[in-house]
Length: 275
Image (cartoon, rainbow, N blue to C red):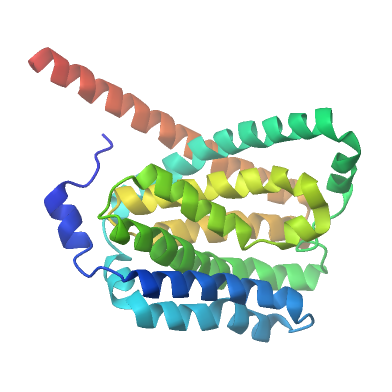
């Protein structure tokens, strides 16, 4: 059954509150580092990773890293259940949202949708580079982005608002997560709203796993890394294999989401009968 952390536990979890100045500074640095790759093209993989992830991780760790890391491995079993379950449920929600955005654009500016036929620049790489990015996704991108956007951005918002309004805060932090992926807007223009709908709902799924596990980052990092890796695996091997593995992840997530829903419904009925 999904239960929100009680007041005492929430106070313990967020006993070291982040200051508004540190939080705003951290968010600005995260976004500035993400955008730096567009201002200074040709950085290369290693230097690009250092700029986009290394600098903001170092600075946000200085601001609030002890609190983030201390909870990163907490309640792993719960994080797996909620991580997979919310991933499956929010993937469906993301598909619905993306479809709605697509239909709105189709009615307002059909020509804009032609931009969606352009190849994703992130996946427009050689097979050798794709294999490298499979491992980079799992070992660097997933952990780094979860640390920054769930650990610092979302966790910091929870700290500032004393662990209240988690759903609204997950949405806000996920909008910032989507905003860091500026290249979609550069490549696809207004049609990028379709991709951004997916990014926001994915971010909310990972935020929910983080929240209901009390701050676990290991599971969201693994899910995030594996999800990104399937895209590159489709380039390294075949698009069919990448799509199949991503579909399998979503199917497992939906099964877990259904199990969580059934368990919650059953426990509610038990409580009603006993009362």
